[in-house]
Image (cartoon, rainbow over all chains, first blue to last red; front, top):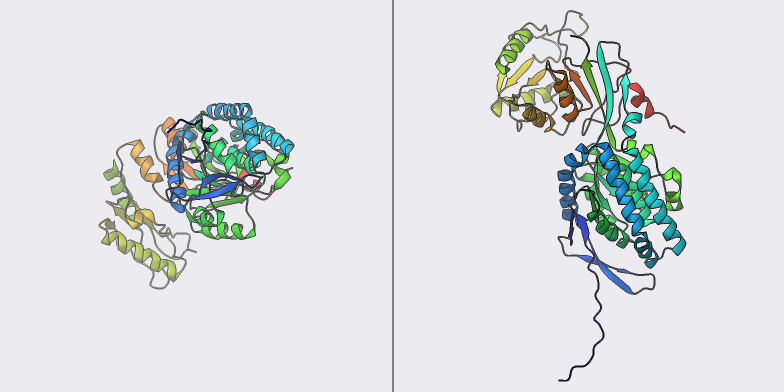
Amino acid sequence: MSAKPMGRLPVTKTPKVYIGGAFVRSESARTFKVTGRDGAFFANIPQCTRKDLRNAVEAAAKAGPGWARRTPYNRAQILYRLAEMLEARSAELAGSLVLFGAREADARRGMAVGVDRLIHYAGWCDKYAQLLGSVNPVASAHFNFTVPEPMGVVGVIAPDSPPLLGLLSMIAPVIASGNTVVALASERVPYPAILLGEMLATSDLPGGVVNLLTGFRRELVPTFATHAHLRAIYASAGPEDRRALRLGAAASVKRVRFTGTEGAGWFADSAQGLDAIRDFVELKTTWHPIGS
Amino acid sequence: MADRVVSRLKNRIRVLRVGDPLDKNTDLGAINSKAQLTTIRRLVASGVREGAAMFQPQCPLPEKGYYFPPTLFTGVTQSHRIAREEIFGPVLSILTFRTVDEAIEKANNTAYGLSAGVWTEKGSRILRMSTELKAGVVWANTFNRFDPSSPFGGYKESGFGREGGRQGLLDYVSLR
């Protein structure tokens, strides 16, 4: 046989989800195909199962106490540095949005807003407690004060549009106060979330603080609703999912919040702020005696 | 320390007067319904069955109405139903601890988190405990105190939101 020059074999990527600081396939080994805007096959994306979701909740619960114990200043630094890293790689992320149908200008603007949003919530890290907490003037000899504390593990269900800015905007306020997150990326455009996971892995965010799943909403929403270790749900959801989430969450008295933001609304300044942080903190009031 | 506290608690509940809730001399009123009385009886029976030691003073209960005597359990473990479920009756389940960490772990090992109480002479320990306890209200060297300016409400499966204080009001308004 004579050696014949061959074209280089294509090296395609196997996208994996980011759980507990590691890149894993779905335990089921199931995947679903995504195609680019040109209709050509792009990749097989993990089709995560209930079991994957439970594994992610376990990882998030494990990371929770350590993350909550970080100083607010340190959490701010970590979020800020994540923003720096996304800024440096925003062309890659914007490219992944364009690949799945976003307009070039929208994708670029979305990335700029996303980076700014992380910086916005980085700034809140050491400030929200002063605004949400208080010293209360009780009519007895007690120093009575209220402080916000993280709830624990929060489930995030991200919108399809904009897939990445929506996801970032929902994760940032939740982790700013020391919660950990299990997020389900957009079903229609999951690939940018895979890329985001790769960037989170090299950021200073400890593994397990943010866990990103890909897969089908209809398969995962019931488990998001009923998993007793998820203390809250933050979802971008239509009427049917909202109903399922509310009903399922009731048994474990889970806090359920739906985003009022949709589509282009995510680009606006009104899509960020203290309210989103307030939705995912518990308030603790201490009665400390005064005098001997 | 536990033995001393338990023996004094027993002395105290021996002299509680159970009776008409409208009588100002009454320490312990009636249970609010037959269904609730049944729940209390069921849980107390489970405490005995699961091996905790029950103490009930010899006290007269009114013949009419839904009454349950003050009850105290010692030798309770975290897996007992009387330590895991809400009894909503005059029943105290006592768990003991050796270290602060153990106390915190036992206190937090529940699906509920409405309130907690800490008794200690050390101010810094109050703050350490109140930082670690997963409860909406932490009373130090006191219990069941309320004030309209102090937010009240639970963590975890103990309910939504807060009542009282600025935080209680915030749930009713939308700031612009």
